[in-house]
Picture 1 (tube, rainbow, N blue to C red):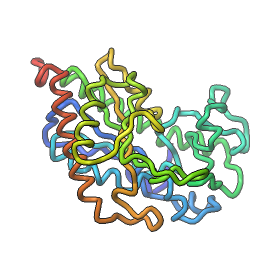
Picture 2 (cartoon, rainbow, N blue to C red):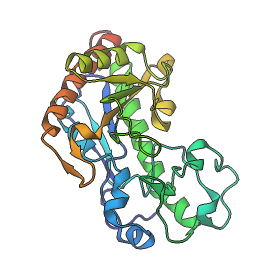
Picture 3 (cartoon, rainbow, N blue to C red):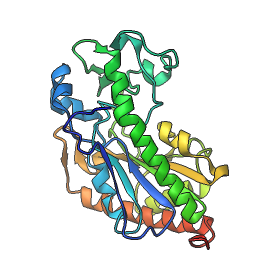
Picture 4 (cartoon, helix red, strand yellow):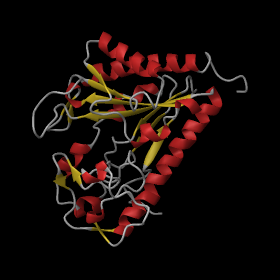
Length: 294
C-alpha cells in the first residue's frame, strides 16, 4: 500500500554494532513528520497537532544503541496513526462509509477520541474539518500500522532466539499536569507493566530503584499501565516481557513552545542508567549470557 512521500521511511530500527543484552527499546509516539495532506485535512495548526507527540523521546533514548540495544521509532506522528492501539480501534463517527465488521468501535480509547486513527489531540480538540473516507483509514493501517508491528515482532523474535528471553521497553512521555478539571502535577515517571502481568516484577523494581535514587518521584501503573504494545507483546510465561516508561515532559521540555530545556541532557543520562540496569536484569533472567547455540 502507498504512504505519503514524506514518510521515507515511515519507521526505522537503529541497530547496535553488537546486540549486548535481550532488551529492545521502542518509541512509537515520537514521530514528527506531518504529511501535507494531513495538515490540509486538519482544522488545527501544526503546533497544536504536535501536542500529542512524545516530543524527542526517541532522542532521549538514542544512547541505548551505543550500549548494545536496538531502538525502533516511528517517523509518522501518533495524531496520524497510533500503533499503540489495536489495529482497528476506529470511531464510526469519523468516517464516510461502513467500517469492517471486526472493527472495535466501542473501546474506551475510541470513546475518548484516541483510537488507531485519533479524532482529537490535546484537550479534546477535534483534528479533522470533515469526515474521512473509510478507505483512507484502512490504507493507513495496511501501509503503516501492520508493517510497523511486523518489524517489531521480528525484532522481538530475533532477540528471543538469541538470548532465550526478550524485554521490550516502550518509551513515552506525558503532560506535566493532569489538565482539564485540575492542575495537579504528575509524578516524574510512571512505570507500566499492566499491573504485573506484562513483565517480571524485577524490571519495574529495578527502574523504580534507579529513578528514586536519583531524586525522582515514581508511580506504577497509574495513570498509565501500558497500552496495546505493552499488553500485546508482554507475555512473561513465554519469555517476552514488556515494560512502559512514561516521562514527565516538564522535566526536559517547554510544553507550550515544544522546545527542549536544560533538563534534557540529565534526563537522557538518567535513562541510560535505567537502560544499563534493565540490561543487567534481562541478562540475569536469560541465564547470564547468550544462548550456547549462538
